[in-house]
Image 1 (cartoon, helix red, strand yellow):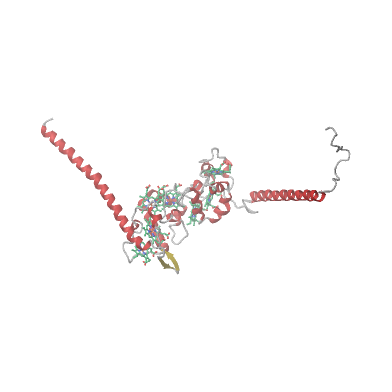
Image 2 (cartoon, protein in one colour):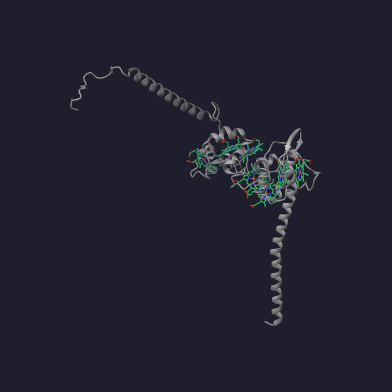
Length: 309
Ligand code: HEC
Ligand code: HEC
Ligand code: HEC
Ligand code: HEC
Ligand code: HEC
Ligand code: HEC
Ligand code: HEC
């Protein structure tokens, strides 16, 4: 190789090294910079919103504007600037501040910017479809995930943690949660800390939830055995014949279970009561006979101490 070519090669290698150095350290400096910038913005916001007493009036109701800094800092978005979600706010006074449903809609629509895949799935779900209609009761991202307290599902503090998510869904599906799920085998197991029994999400999914009438749903009749098969090795075909959520009431789907429960409850009460009465009577007789000659003693038994046994 001639010296000229070698010099060119050396120059090229040096250029690449310098370029890479800038790329690595430059981005580190930039990352640090953006983190520091976010922290500075948040410090400003929290000077007011970090105070527990900060409130505003909306529709005649008093709304708290307090943000718990400690919870926020350890949340998944803790290092992010508040303005990444509150894009309409930059300084104070807030000229474009929103309230009520408008605020909820605006902030939730920002999640899409960074969570594209999840948002696309969510839009196909019953909850996502409901959100198309303005003013309707619905479940948006923050209804399930929380607001400034969003954590990974493995985190005990998360609203979507195995034993917390049942309460999160239960906020809106109160009857199914309280009267059906909590009475079920799965519900009792999860309540007692079971990590393997099914929560609402194990059967319904999270961002693709659809009602049982929809053939694409995990709980559509024909899909039920497959849904249960995630955990139960041999899903029986007749799993789909029964009703998963029933209320323990004298009429309706829960009637056989209700009457079985009633039968065993009363059987237990009657047996225990009779037992207690029996014991009381025996005790009464023993007390009454105490100190008197035992009339029941057999006359033909020899009570002589010297009688060989
Ligand atoms: C000087 C105090 C102060 C600072 C600083 C401040 N806010 Fe506010 N913020 C308020 C008050 C007071 C309200 C009540 C509504 C209003 O007055 O506009 C409010 C309302 C809000 C609302 C709710 C809007 C509503 O009416 O429900 C959001 C969201 C908000 N602020 C976010 C922020 C963010 C993000 C920052 C930082 C970039 C910030 N605020 C900085 C005082 C402040
Ligand atoms: C991951 C997105 C996200 C980030 C980051 C975020 N917020 Fe919010 N914030 C929300 C959502 C969603 C709501 C709407 C809550 C609702 O009422 O359902 C909200 C509501 C609010 C409100 C209105 C009162 C309330 O609690 O409903 C205030 C004030 C507020 N945020 C301040 C802040 C401040 C200050 C920060 C930074 C320390 C911040 N937010 C960071 C998502 C975010
Ligand atoms: C500016 C971008 C951005 C916005 C806006 C944003 N997030 Fe995030 N979110 C992130 C990043 C980055 C992470 C951390 C990812 C990681 O470390 O796995 C995260 C993590 C999460 C997680 C935990 C993910 C996991 O792996 O378990 C959830 C849940 C979440 N975000 C929900 C929301 C919701 C709900 C909103 C809207 C209120 C929102 N995010 C808005 C960037 C964003
Ligand atoms: C009906 C409740 C519910 C709604 C509404 C909801 N999520 Fe989730 N989300 C969950 C649950 C539950 C998980 C945990 C995943 C699991 O166990 O399958 C989760 C997980 C996540 C994750 C972690 C990554 C992953 O794919 O598992 C992100 C990010 C997330 N959600 C963002 C969002 C965003 C953004 C929205 C709004 C467009 C949203 N979620 C709406 C319940 C919900
Ligand atoms: C073991 C699986 C399983 C679990 C756990 C579960 N579901 Fe269901 N869910 C089903 C099935 C299957 C259906 C279809 C109707 C039926 O069989 O009751 C259903 C139906 C529903 C419906 C529609 C009711 C209707 O009749 O239209 C709602 C709402 C619902 N579930 C909410 C929940 C909530 C909330 C939880 C948690 C508290 C939960 N489910 C836990 C399997 C489950
Ligand atoms: C903020 C309220 C809210 C939360 C939280 C919520 N939902 Fe819903 N959900 C609704 C509304 C409203 C509907 C539509 C009306 C209806 O059918 O009850 C619905 C519909 C459903 C349906 C279909 C019902 C049918 O008959 O077609 C299922 C299944 C369901 N939700 C399951 C869940 C599960 C599982 C969770 C928790 C991961 C959850 N929901 C969290 C409000 C909520
Ligand atoms: C996330 C996993 C999971 C899913 C999904 C699930 N189960 Fe279970 N189920 C469990 C666990 C764990 C137990 C407790 C088993 C034990 O300790 O014997 C249980 C117990 C039961 C029991 C009572 C006890 C027994 O072993 O017979 C019935 C009945 C049952 N499941 C039916 C269903 C049906 C029907 C479905 C589908 C609609 C379903 N399960 C979906 C995990 C699951």
